[in-house]
Every structure is written in structure tokens, then in C-alpha cells.
Length: 282
Ligand SMILES: Nc1ncnc2c1ncn2[C@@H]1O[C@H](COP(=O)(O)OP(=O)(O)OP(=O)(O)O)[C@@H](O)[C@H]1O
Image (cartoon, rainbow, N blue to C red; front, side, top):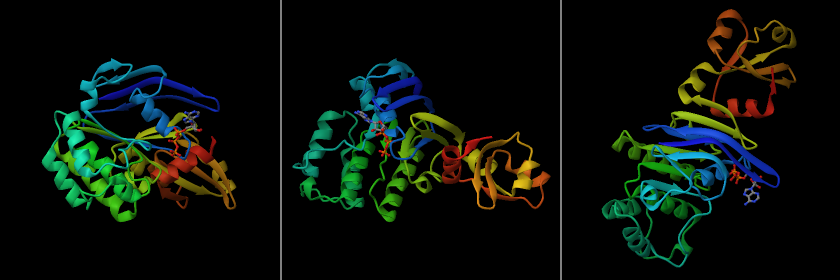
């Protein structure tokens, strides 16, 4: 559905250099700290910034998506939005002109469901209301692919939950749809996404299926002596701790079976991400 191959973008103090694939029917998450390069990757994928490397969208190599392709993508970007002087009635009219597939009824229903007032100017909207509006716009023109950069940024836990539910409903409606979504709140993405890409300083440091990450990865907490005897085959990162070392491993069950008494915690996106960035290569 969307493929980035060796995409490179250079700024004065930063370089993005990555490959990433969003497959049909999948929710793919891009996780990274502030400044890791998430927005730059999204902009490169959408042809909003010049870059090297290849981007394919809906099976076609593109420099910039054309109108026809854009109609098939629902986008939320950090710095996108409508003029603050418009109302949702205005937005409804604009979307109707922009998108042949605009679903007016769904737009109205979602605005009601998310308690977005039709008559008020957007400048009176709170941060959360603006975030909800962006999502409504992305969800109401029969897009096949959603590209969502931090769609839940600035939202409280209830509002985040509401938007994540909308994404689940969107996917349930058609099994060929896909989502690329970024966030630095990994608890939002863990139950939602099928694939996780972790990005650090412009480079993808890990790509894994979420199920594999949660089932097979683990965090070993070992004394120096225990560490000295550990089989290193599946150790990915190690970090010094007051009690000895913590190690990120794959094949958690291998260590559990072969080293009884060793403390091994289950993997989570946060734990894996922290170790991939802060830990040292084994
Ligand atoms: N137009 C630009 N000119 C120069 N540097 C830029 C530009 N846009 C982004 N950068 C730099 O690229 C790096 C990555 O920025 P980017 O916005 O992609 O990160 P991010 O992962 O989206 O961060 P955040 O989570 O804080 O939004 C940063 O160091 C940023 O300063």
C-alpha cells in the first residue's frame, strides 16, 4: 500500500535514512522520541518535502501523490489544519468540493459523536477539538490509507480512547484498508497496531510485528556473574544498572527455560524502545 525504499532527507543537523512498508489490512506504527524523524518521514512519504530514494503508493512509484492518489489518503499532520476563521459548516462545504468520495452524513455523525459544534469558529476550539476535527476530516472521504502523524497529541486519555476506537471501526469496515500512525505514547499503539517501526536519529532501529515484540522479547535483569554466563545469541542490547545489567533479548522463553531463577520481564514497546536507544550493542 505504501513503501519507502532507502528514503533520505538531509537537514543541517539531521539525516533521515530509512525504508518502511505499510501493508494492506495492517496498522503500522512509527514510534520514536521527539526529534527522531517521524514527521520528516511522513512528509517524505506524502511528497511534501524533496528527498532521495523511492516511495511507492498503491503499487505505483511516485514523486508526489497526484490528485487521484490523494483522494485515497486520509492525512493528519502536526502542522496541518483549516483556517481558524472557518466553522465546521464551512469545512463540510470545502470537503464536499475537494473529495468526490466525501461522506457528508458520516461527517455530521462524527462531529456530533465527538461533540464538535457546527456553528462555532475553529479558533474557539480547544487543542483536543482541533485534533478531533483533523481526524474526522481524514475519516470521511473513503480513504484507503490513513497517514496519521501524532493524531492523539495533546488529547486526554478519554479523547485518545475515542479516537483510537474510530480507527478500529475504520479498519473493521474494509479489510484492505491500512494505517500508518506515529505517536510517542506507545500505550496507545500497543493494542492497536500490527507492526512497529522504531526510529531513532533518522534511522529505523527495529521493525517487528507487535505480537512478536510482546511475546518473544524480554528484559533480563542479571547480576554481573549471571550475565557472564548468559548465551549471547539472542541478546540485542545491554545496559549497566546498579544491580548488574539489564539486557534486551529475543527468544525470552529460551532464557526462561535455560536459566531458571533469572529475572525476565515481558517485552513492551516502551521497554524495547528504551533499550534499543539507551542500551549498548552486545
Ligand atoms: N525544515 C527543517 N529544517 C531543518 N531541520 C529540520 C526541519 N524539519 C525538521 N528538522 C529537524 O529534523 C529532525 C527531526 O524532526 P521531526 O519533526 O521529523 O521529528 P519528530 O520525530 O516528528 O519529532 P516530534 O515527536 O517532536 O514531533 C529534528 O532535529 C528537526 O530539528
